[in-house]
Image (cartoon, rainbow, N blue to C red; front, top):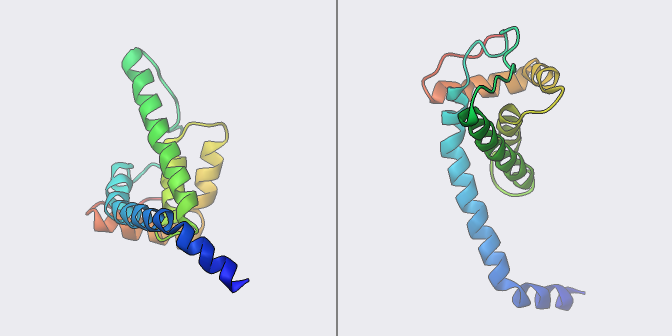
Length: 136
């Protein structure tokens, strides 16, 4: 059995090294990007009445929603991957959810932000970006 595992590791050594390098790059990028992205969210975001009212007046709004959704989906998928590899998986998942548009998003966000450890972590990361803490 051990010989089989050793053979697999030597057979796929290049792929394992590539996966390790990609994991390290994603880890560093999320460390640098997460506080900045959290800083872009308004501090009163969770106390606003209806922050998700989607107003599309021209093609630029549609493009902005598509770009934001693609970035959110990429963060969500990267966060899921980072749950098993080095990185800030949970925080990346949260950022991805904040950027995506889907029914029930507001309820999910409020449930997440009312979890004290999550709230404290998000505010700690906002402090790293020199932004005021979230209100709830």
